[in-house]
Amino acid sequence: MMVTVNPCFHWIGYHLTSNLLQEGIEVIGIDPIEDPKSDLLYMYVGRNSNFQHFFQRSDKENHIQQSNDEWEVDLVDNGLLLRHGDKESEWIEIPLLYGEWMDIGKTGIKEKGEFVQWIMEHKATYVGDFIEAFLGMFLNQQPLRVEQRVEDKDTILERVEALWRCEQLLRKF
Image 1 (cartoon, one colour):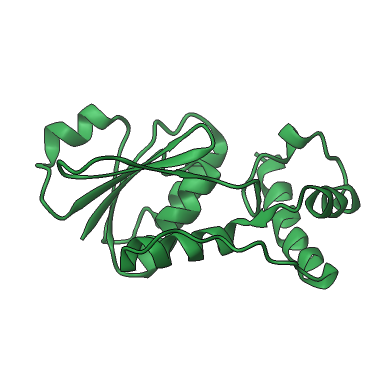
Image 2 (tube, one colour):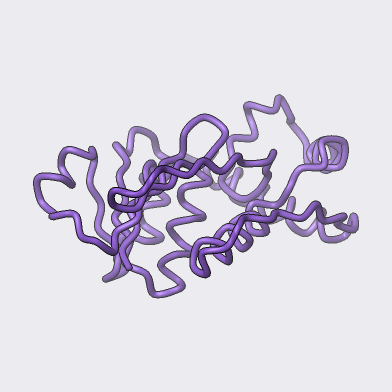
């Protein structure tokens, strides 16, 4: 199996790419790498022998022939568009997510405590939980069910701490 992820260094695309690689799946990533965050995330997966990167879809099409076992996953607006060969596309809506490498600036949040409150108020889903559910569906070809998990505050605090470390690393760039 081969999966093309576009964009592979968007924070959700990165989590998807990374988890597919951990499953031993060959991943072709498409991303123009236009910012320091994308460049940093490339360093985490770029040496994996199952990963190939192209800046544009046309670059990939010029170098790799599409095979029958290839899937394409495009992050579009608030969803994932899945395609497999000539089969009809499938659209999966992404719930409100939070997690490492997200753009916290878009939320207007400046402090960890505010972010914990935002997660609880919006009942946001942790990106790792979403990716786990997505991969379970994708690899087993079953319908996607992202169950609303009620996380305890300690779990949220632990996850926000990891997210905040990522944010601090990005601010150094």
